[in-house]
Image 1 (spheres, helix red, strand yellow):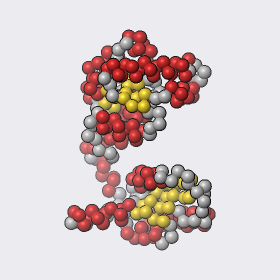
Image 2 (tube, one colour; image 1 turned 45 degrees about the vertical axis):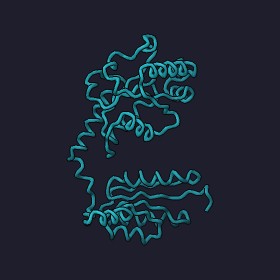
Image 3 (cartoon, one colour; image 1 turned 30 degrees about the vertical axis):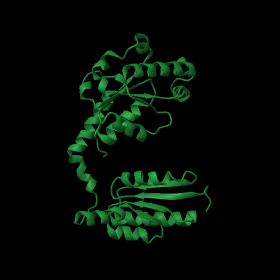
Image 4 (tube, helix red, strand yellow; image 1 turned 180 degrees about the vertical axis):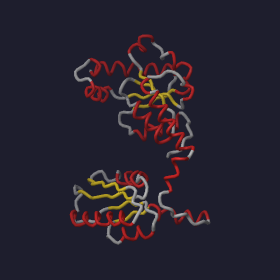
Length: 276
């Protein structure tokens, strides 16, 4: 097999599959020269669905001529054994971690299927939904009230990544994230928007390279002054000058993933939030 071949990867779970997929992506990212055909199979919670997975794995073996990789979070030993018998490379996340935890804690795990379902009734889940609603209501400076309830307020020029980062923080960590665009009028006044003055300790800035910002804005408003490299460079320089003057921590989002940006914000603003 050469490094340019495609390898089929299955993410199989009796729940949403998010855990298997997140862990799998972290590992697969270490092999950038290989193309991966990804198949996500969530809610595999009965034998019929397990057998569907078995058939799909065997078809992949026949089609590709090489065994697929299977990231698995099924808790049923019988189901896992059926997957193992396909001959695929099976990476069983529960087998890797549950056993050592049982030994350490001196207690058998429940091995219950679908334990995630009860989360919808938990306070953490309700807090996350509340954070998402807050973030949507305070996107792009739409609502200037209730900012005292925010955990963080992102500032930066238009299209610098504030909205997707805010939503990721809300969905993954239950963070109430508002965001405000810094616009030419703010630069002319040479100060932050008035409603942000009282919440300086909650502010975190995002910036971006002029070339990348221009590319993003061209998709929205092609051939406009708004999207020109010259205007993008002016806005970014003014925004960075303002953030330095106001003592606002900020980072360049150009080459950073949302995950990296969010981790940096959580650390810098000292938000002790747990991933969901």
